[in-house]
Image (cartoon, rainbow, N blue to C red; front, top):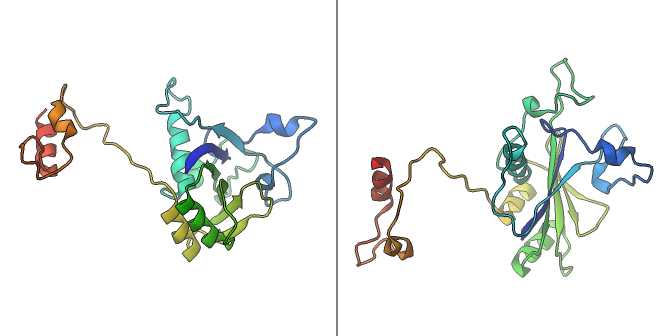
Length: 213
C-alpha cells in the first residue's frame, strides 16, 4: 500500500480547514463530522508518490507532519498538550480533547486487500484504497474506497491489533550517531553476516566501528 494523503484536525499548529468550511460551496466529507453535530473539515496533506525527503524552514511543520503519520498509524499516542492552542475547543478546565489524525492509503496488494476484507467483513469485495482515522478519545474509523459509512472499533480491540499487522511501520534513524565519511562498496553490497570475504561485520562490530568515528 502507498500513503497518498495525511489528515489532521486540532493538532498543534494544524487547526482545521476553515477556508474550505467558509466556502459557499462547502460539502463536508463523511469523516469531517464532529461530536457536537458540526462539520470541521480535516486539513489534507497530499503525499506525492515520489516523495523521499521533506525540507523546509524551522518551525514550518516538518516534524509535525511525521508525528501525525506516526499517530495515525497508532505507533505513538497524542495527548492533550498536542491539542491546537488556537482552537475554539481548547479549555482551561483540564478536560481537554485529543487531536484527530488520519491517513489515506492506495494501491493495495492482493494480500493487503484480502486482509482488509477479512477485517471489515467484506470478503470477495476487493479493496484498492481506504482511509483510516483515529478520533478522540480512542476510536478508529475505516472508510473503504469512497464509502460513507465507516467500520468503527476501539483502539484497544482485537480488530485494532489485526489492523496494526496490515499497516506499514515507521523506522526512525539515530540522527545523533556519527557516520564515517566513506564506506567500501564491497561492504555495502554484502548482505550476509557470514560473508566469507570478511568485508561484512556483525551488528556489534558495526556499532563499535561507527562509535569510533
